[in-house]
Each structure stands twice: as structure tokens, then as C-alpha cells.
Length: 172
Image (cartoon, rainbow, N blue to C red; front, side, top):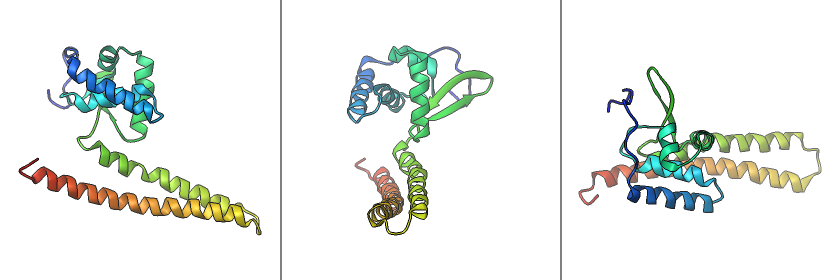
């Protein structure tokens, strides 16, 4: 199917083997304190061979409500794991994920870290003189987020080098 072509009909349901992976990722995702449906949607998009999947197809195959799909897909998009895909002339919502969503996720964490740095700095700027305990804790918060942002950049560079080297390897 062309990336922008409108699907004629909804594809056949996913195989039980693939759905097993989807369910297992959902359980793992929920064990980490996240909604299970998020993990199921992510698992589905990871294992499907389709370029993008409609919200209706996700609801059908995951036996979930349209509201659950909508809510969880939006949250996954906000944190950088999936993306909305528009099909010309079609008002339905379609979802996709990058081949390397892990790099996208890592890069997408930077605004969160920058926000935390600014939040700590604003609190420091408003803190009255003499409050050494709060000042020390807020400085550590700001400095940790600054350090972590730099570490994220290095991790992303290291990951892309590893990924590119691995993809070129005859053993991969």
C-alpha cells in the first residue's frame, strides 16, 4: 500500500502469534506502572507489517473501546513512541511508529528535562536567602536534569552508531 493511499477495506485481523506478543508487551508495560492498553497499542504497531493502522482496526483487533484507543494513542504520541498519520480524504485516525522509535523516544525526553531544569531554576530564583536545605535540593534537581540532558545526547549518539554498525554487520 502506498504510504498516503486510502485503505479500501480493513485488513484481516492479526495472527494469534502476533497478538501474543502484543498482550505480553501490554502486561510488561502495565508492570512498569503504565496503562496496559498503551503497551498493547505499542506492541501492535511494532509487530504489524502495515505502514499505519487505523484506530478502528486497533479497537477491533485489541477488543477495546474507541475511547481507550484514542486516550492511550494520544499519550503514546505525546511521549514520542507513536505518530498520527493522515490519509488524504479520510477523517479516520491512523497511527504508526518509527522503525527506531527508541531513538525518537530518547530525543523526545529532552523537553521534559529542560522543563524540569527551568522549574528548578524558577524555584531557586524565588527562594529567600538563608534557606540552604531547599536551595541545595533544588540545585541538585537543576544540575541533575542538566547532566541527564547531556547524557541523553550522548546515549542517542552512541545508540545510532551502534544501530548503524549492527545493521551493516553480516551477522545481523
